[in-house]
Image (cartoon, rainbow, N blue to C red; front, side):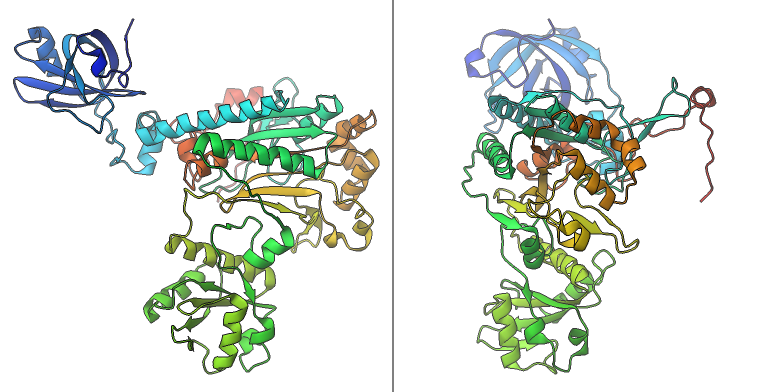
Length: 585
């Protein structure tokens, strides 16, 4: 055997035992007559000692040649360490080596395999197999495993059955672009990789499986951010004979279970908030409620003066930033520059300093007196010492801009404590969303989401007012899960397709298999899908998901380690009946 123990296992109780270890050389310290080597594996580090007087000569000479990341096997005796290291679990002992085998030599790594490395993100992604040896990445992957196991444990205890669904499916419009896969056996035809197993899990409900789950890869060909990847993992779930309340209770239970088992935190309260309230109060549908700075709409107290910027605005809205009245003019100017960046898009910002003596100092003192500004403070909830930041413009745009500012100020003021967890249900989403460019409505979630009971008739008269039987689970300002009660009736589904612009022929071509299934006794059903990558990252105290994915893609969707995507040779293209017509940019 290559090892009798791991490199994180040995303690003082093992002193005098002969052991065999194997792993990677973390570092070597050669003092001439004595050599110390830190040997590392997944489980920890053990110090090896090579003594010129006690170690066989050939072994001692070989030890001198060891470099970083050499893979070695050693045999030796566990002895008490003279200079103990209380920071290491194995710090009370070391191994006096009697036998040494170099299993594989290593080139000098392009960055140090340390917790605090000198390697930038690009070089670490290129050599990801080396980066995984570092504790931060290794521990993140182990953490992901633990979360995944707890998910399976909880759902299995609730009588959910894990069922696999296909990866090679039919391309269907679900909101993002599909990744397509050519079929050699069916010339000129293509599979698509699933954006989600949506239709399959509904078919499983028709099939009577009752409670389904799957930890499944999904694929979307869309622009990327730090928290997005072209391939990602969902905890996909569906239940039959349920209403919204049943689903919220089950997955509130799953979230509580994970917080308790993974983080040791008990969370009793999962508040609920309507979509409309979230947008009005926080400017987005996934608000972080760990801190305040709720929006105060100022139209009634800020318009009808002589300040035309506000008078011409659809919405004037502000937030009270706690204890920021001490900001200097230079700091405020930088804040104004921040909101004017293209990523935010504001044209400017009005501010009011709420002084400790109860007076106000504003950038618009020319137009508003102290009594006016006191009303602004009342509406925004500002206290002495706070800074009121006000934006104005188109309602939807200005809410998004102020939401971005609210999150930025929370970061600057350290209000987003990663060790604090604040879950929230957002409910009553609009069923349809208006595309301002085309003037057409499309499904805010997906075409299979049912409207709230009694609202179907509004589709003809006021489609924008129809509420969906849909819900999102938000954790610390991130959407970690979302779902809906599905349409299970063929006639209602046909009405939905009609309002989304599908002809009968298009609906049958795209989703005929689902419509047919609904004719054979489809039960009422609904479900929810968690984004596993994001959920794990938040539980791990991080905002980005890459370190919790073994082999992630970069912001361009490339795997720089294996250099993918990549061209394929002409013979493969010919076999697949594909001809390239690439236009120069």
